[in-house]
Image (cartoon, rainbow, N blue to C red; front, side, top):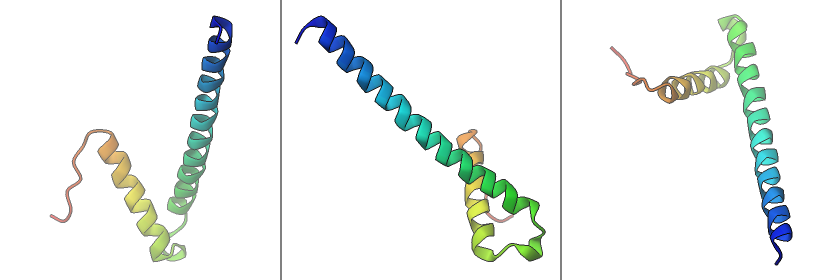
Length: 73
């Protein structure tokens, strides 16, 4: 394989990785926007499953920021 072919192959792999990462981030952002919409509802309008999803997402965000999640008091 020539240097040019290898360079093109590597560029294609990088492009594919970036496309996959872009799609992953798009899906994640859609999910986060959905959580924001759920939080904006009144608590009477939110079912238990939706609220649990929001709580789990919030804990993941807190952990990703380097904080500990403490359950209870």
